Amino acid sequence: MADKKRMAHLSIVRDEDLPAGIGSKPAVWGVLMTALAAAMMLGSGNGLSMLQTLSIVAAFPFAFIMVISMAALVKALRKETKSDAALST
Image 1 (cartoon, helix red, strand yellow):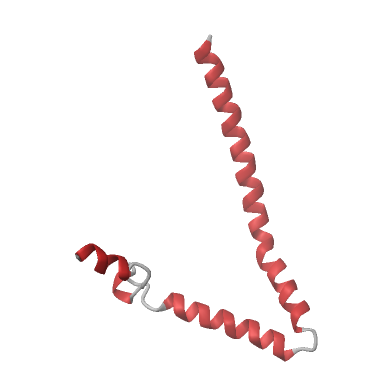
Image 2 (image 1 turned 135 degrees about the horizontal axis):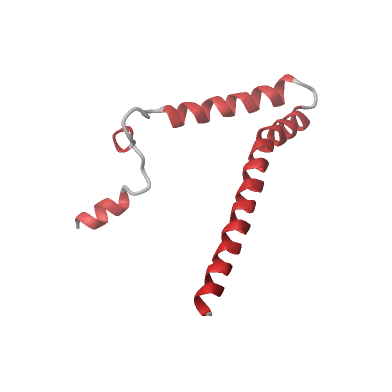
């Protein structure tokens, strides 16, 4: 019976369940982001275009992280291939 009760509450996140110091910050962050998007869309004549531009600008730094991750993956795969070849001989 305890498992069913636990499963029922599995998707509910309470402030007590979060690590110390987080509190309601995720909810506040979500409300602020929604308010920012709404203000940009309503505040100018081309709100959708501005929102698209902001999305691209916000995602641009992530592109560098992805390139570095891909380079690290290639380096790790090459190293693994060399170590496998050394072990098989």
